[in-house]
Amino acid sequence: MTTTSDMATRPISIDRHTSEAVRKRRTLTKVITYFCLTLAGLMFAFPLYWTVSSSLQTWQELRSFTPHLWPATPQWHNYADVFQTVPFARWMANSFLIVFITIPGTIITATLTAYAFARFNFVGKNVWFILMLGTMMIPGTVTLIPQYLLWFKLKLINTYVPLTIGSWLGGSAFMIFLLRQFILSIPRDLDEAALIDGAGPFRILWSVIVPLMKPALTTVAILQFLNDWNEFFAPFIYLNRAELFTAAVGLRYFQYIPLETNDPRDHLLMAAAAVMTIPVIALFAAAQRYFISGVVLSGLKL
Image (tube, rainbow, N blue to C red):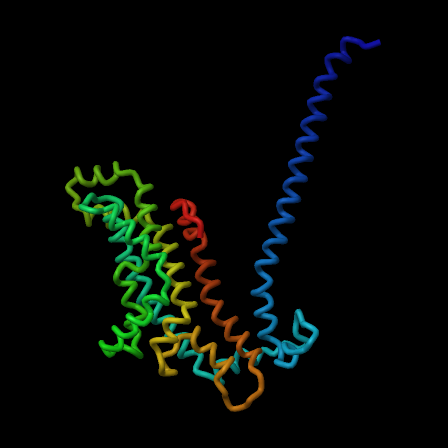
C-alpha cells in the first residue's frame, strides 16, 4: 500500500534520476567532443610533426621503403648544414626585410581605403567597391606578363620594388574588405561625438577608430606576413640573383640546384622548411588572441 510519504518522495526521486541522466549525457557529449577535437588536432599537426621528424633523419632514412616516424639517431647537424650549404640566413633576412616593408604599408593604406568606404559617401562608392572586390577574381597569371614588362621597362627587375609597392597602394582587396567590415561594426555615435568635439576625419580615424581596430589590424598584419613569407612565384619571377632570393625561393636549391655533391638533400630541405615555420608559429602564438578576435568580429571565414 502506497503511503502519503512515498507519494511525496517519488517526484523528488524522479527529478534526481532525470538530472543525473542529463548530467551523464552532457558528460558523454563532452568526452566525444574533446575526443573528436583532439583527433582533428593531431591530424592537422601531423604534417608539422612529419616535417620536424624528417629534418632530423638522414636522406637514406627518408628514401627508405619503410617510413620512419622518428629517426634512429637524430641528425641535429642537419640544421647547421642548411646554413653552411647555402646562404640561408641571408635569404631569411631578405624575407624579413620584405615583410617589414609590406606590413606597415598594407596596414596604413588599407585602413585609409577601408575608412573611406565605410564612413564617407561619394559618387560611385558602391560601384568602386564592387570593382575593387572584383579584382579578387582575376588570376595573378593574367597580369603577370604586363606587370613584368612594366617593371622591366622601369629597370626595377632584381629589386624589391615589384614585391613591396603593392602593399603601399592599398594592399589587397581582401584586406580592405576585412577592415571595412570591422569599421562598419564600430558605432557611428563615436564618430559624431568626436566630430562635436571638433575632431576632423583623420583625427577621428587616428584617435577613435584605430584604437578599436587592434584585432583587425593584427589579423591583417598576420595575413600579410603569411602572404609575403610564403610567396614563391613573384620573387622567383622578379629576382634572378641568388643574394636577393627570399627563403621560399631558396628552398629550390635543395631540390634542383646541384651543389658540391650529387647526394639527395631531402633531409636539408625538410630542415630548411622547419626553420621557415618558426617565425610563423612564433607570430601566431604571440598574436593569436587578437587574430581570432579579429576574424570573429569581422565575421569572415578564412
